[in-house]
Length: 80
Image 1 (cartoon, rainbow, N blue to C red):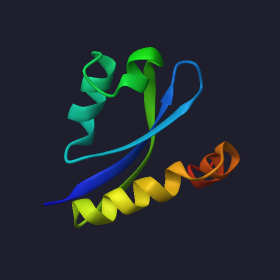
Image 2: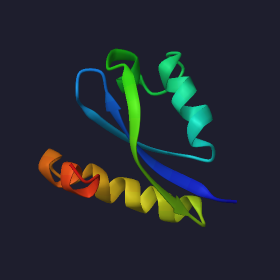
Image 3: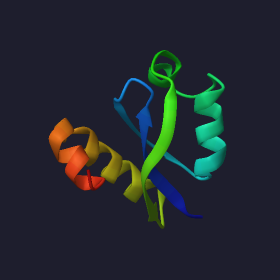
Image 4: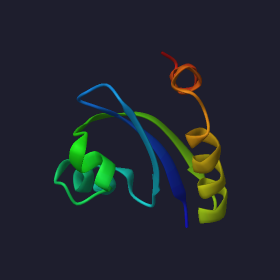
């Protein structure tokens, strides 16, 4: 089973990082207030980065690594 890491840009221009099996389904959950607590307060605008992994473990490790980055480093990662 494939897992995907994604980074969302919110309407107030913050970034949120997560993992999912189905990114579009998860994005809809975030939009509808069923996702993470963070995205209930900071409404998602668009998906700005995705990466595919062969296991949940690999995706979680990359999520952790990205969450340790500064905002500037995250923006560089997503190409802004």
